[in-house]
Length: 228
Image 1 (cartoon, rainbow, N blue to C red):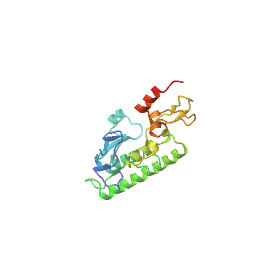
Image 2: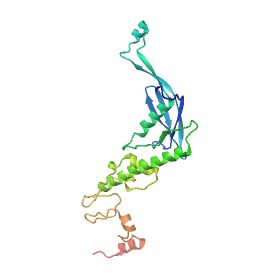
Image 3: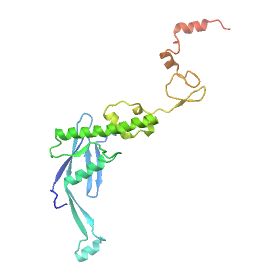
Image 4: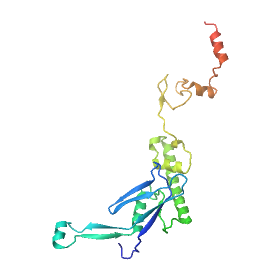
């Protein structure tokens, strides 16, 4: 521990962003322990996680337990990590897991052990919204240049869902189909092939007024029509 650093036995991490996979927590593995960062569930504004202080050892030169037993000289040095230092490192690991210099995924260390203040929450929500809006803007530019779902980042999609923003690139990917008449690639659920004019979806064509609906009267008329 840094001699100028105040010892803190406990710290509290606040998370404002739920995990999309439904998991209740994120696991952070460190040499001095395994930590669990809780995330809010649906309807919750935030979730808290308590982080304790820890000690760890580092080898000084070639560590040899047999030599230590014989000589009594310990070739390992003990390090003390304050709870706040551990918590800040965990938050950095989670928040830095995205593109951009200001990547942020809604976790921060509370100033108080009782939880976040209103100002801290407002700042975190604003920071998360700014980051997601930047990723959405990048996705919009990518979609304008090349409208392919596989080129849109999962982070932009996550941000759009969290902010309840509708985007064409957010819809589920549907593979292109083939026109049964000419074999050209067509978008799913189109009524008419733009290449050859073949009607590929009769129901949709009728809804759009491109075909006269087949009524009972029309069917009877067709049956009674004289053959040529």
